[in-house]
Length: 162
View 1: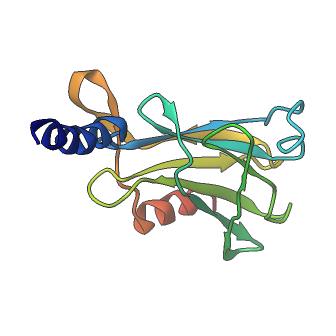
View 2 (view 1 turned 180 degrees about the vertical axis):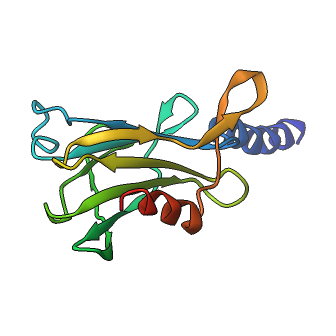
């Protein structure tokens, strides 16, 4: 009887130990250009990498191309293709050559504070990547924590394209 109770108590404990905790925020990095030796990434404009701490994870990736074309504001919802490496997603060019563009790319992990990491990728006039910024702040033990990027923050960045 004691052995049966012990076995029943150990199983839930093992499940808790074996399930990785997702405490803490996600992180996002941008690879530009994508690796031409990876067949799925070969024609990608760039590759988005999703992390939880130092571990690549297949968290949801989303984004928009925010632009000014002939003086008119444009928003294009982007689609991403998962690659063979965990947490890596190819982004193919889905916006026109005309205009000035900012890519707002997001990795989201659950709900709550610091649940999204955003990369703001500013494109140069020739369409290449001019800069990439992940808005963040200093956190515990010197680690960078992503800050929440609002629609107003993105609009302020798009205004700089004019």
